[in-house]
Length: 251
Image 1 (tube, one colour):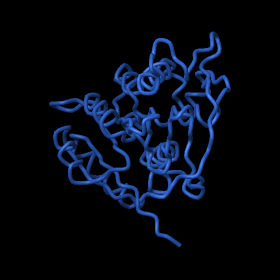
Image 2: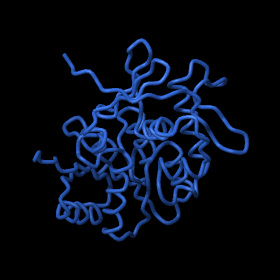
Image 3: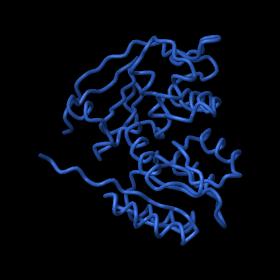
Image 4: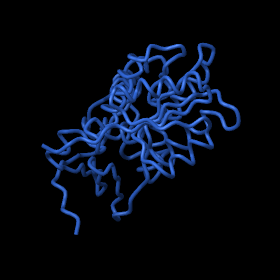
């Protein structure tokens, strides 16, 4: 049996009294935890480590958590759970709209945070530690549609010319939802459940924002989409045939 690498967490919070005990608790739960006290420290830390998920405080001196969240999602495609205060409802909404995976409100129960971490990792396809679901790893299958290819094992999207297209975690999950159910009409509630999970129904417009970002990646004209079509009163439909094919071994 192949050993599964432990999940690596980057915990970013300027409150030492919260960060250090939480890091100790998460380490006791089997995670590898790295700490950063600011956005600048987190950026430096990520040059040294490979994180599977980031726990990110919104309110920090200097660069705030929302700015760092946007950077992590757009440049590295990392799953992010926001750590928020009770009065930061607007910031939570903005965070989810830019692609954060979940949030917990301080003070929180550490066991709940662990459950949410594992839920986000499952949705992100990182439950087995290598960025793909067990089924994808076993079958080693690619998604193909109209010349485009999505490799779930490598989480790599390639256009019809074979050029790799950068895709964030949120965009990957949204695309997977469409590719898993091509031609089906998916309303916003179902997409939220598939992409962001519980409590995400409170932030309905997050779906529209994620769809818009994904359209800019895969559509030749995002204002007249060929693939992700809007169904009036119904949601969205992926209007292309999708095939699962075995990947070719790398040379």
